[in-house]
View 1 (tube, rainbow, N blue to C red):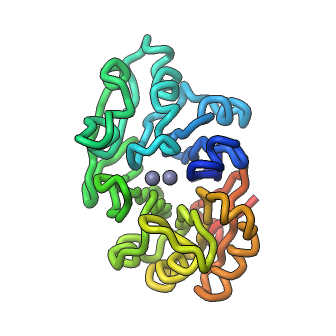
View 2: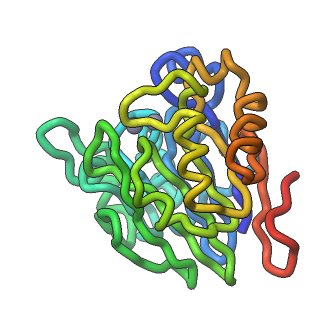
Length: 262
Ligand SMILES: [Zn+2]
Ligand SMILES: [Zn+2]
């Protein structure tokens, strides 16, 4: 599997000012899946020469705009402008159905363009072209939000989604080959519903993945320096950790030792 980071920013000011791109990421392999297509996902992924007509699925962790703004556009691309009924749409109930707080973020029209639409809650499992996907628990402002765990050809990629520390994360992401963490805040700057570097250390000590990638940086994180925070997390957790950059590609391959970073 290969992970392409179309954006590594998150939270209000980073989005509004595009201090980092906010396009989410694509996992490519036996199935090609776009995760959390936030603002700029279409443009950033095209700049990175991604062929969106080859997507098999779009997955939305929760209804916040930094995770979903371009979802309708990415579905248009996946379905050849709505001409071919294809692909899967996976999302939290907030993002696909809406609730008293959130309007659904994918329009009724676009939900009908795809071949299959699946509303997921933590613990749900499905599979696309032999890639297994499990929705994972979160504790966040959108209480129906999820993270994801992907397994293919003996390798596992975890994605926390937006969440603060909860004990289940250590178990659900146990021994992943690669864990993508939405580490919005630096150490010493906690914020409810989100991971900061100290909470990420706690998750990593429990989950013990082979490698960790931090992303979804807010303003405070950019000021503190994501690379410096990654070094701190690595030192304290004992897990090799890197800070994602816009456009970065990471390979998680069979037959190779652990995870290979470009
Ligand atoms: Zn977010
Ligand atoms: Zn959020």
